[in-house]
Length: 250
Image (cartoon, rainbow, N blue to C red; front, side):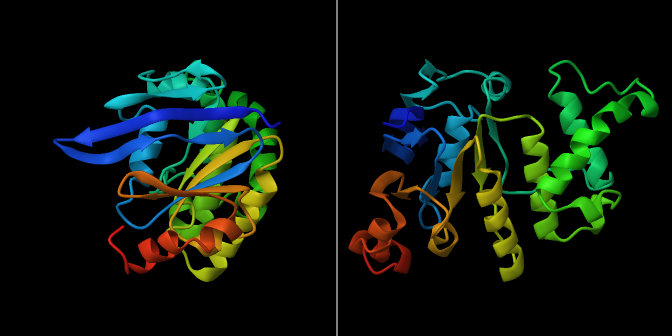
């Protein structure tokens, strides 16, 4: 049986009486790509914020590798190997792709960004940075200023900076949001390629993105788990279809 790497028990978050996440029990198995999907306002990103301690839960528990991380500071959660990306690209626009990845590698040392060190000393990170850029298909953009890259390439770069932190589990928040079809295909292929030796939990709203990519899918609506299972199972669920098409009070 596959081990559970991340789990929640009755995870709940209220905002002034509004329940954004309502009693969610989530189990993510080691080595899987697990999608958290649902229509707009379903509570997906709030759930991510709870898992990574950017928000404290009103009730419930979160365990990572069997350890209770509920209420732990975000930096400590990251040090344990649970690393997230954000829905809005979070790279430095006026640096090159290589410089962005190198900064992430410097931070992975757990000390400081070493801003006082000379450029030549920091080149020790270049080989690994070049490899990470190759891994995400950005070798030809090494010296490109990030502001000049397309949105899809910026998201690929963000995945490279996330990989630089050597995560045991990656949380990807809407990795294909706002992309053209060609960029969507690029990111889907990239996620499939980098899964080796890692667990991935991704927030998505698009069923076609997770088809053929994810081992398991959890569907949220109004903060609650509506359905869970394989793509084939979830995509045929009448309640899921109704929630996405807006034909039912769900």
